[in-house]
Length: 95
Image (tube, rainbow, N blue to C red):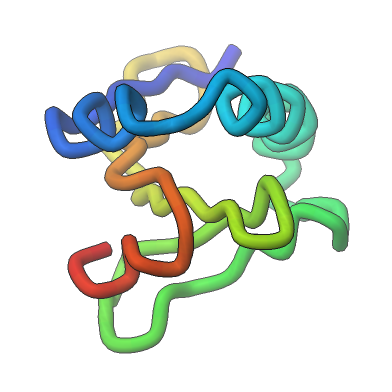
């Protein structure tokens, strides 16, 4: 089973989301976790690298909803994801 952690910045961003935005992210996260072991993500999640931020990736969870993450050290249970930021396109200023 994959493991994850959140940065303090992600937690601060999370508090600024609406209930609907949180719900949408959680739905996308379920699909993301299901795809994580294979490393092949369904097209609707639009997982890709963040330009200019080596090792940082983005996931789309709504038309203007994005989250950034990076892979961390394996915790012994499959991939380990570090959630960095969540919000709108504004998060790309400091992904």
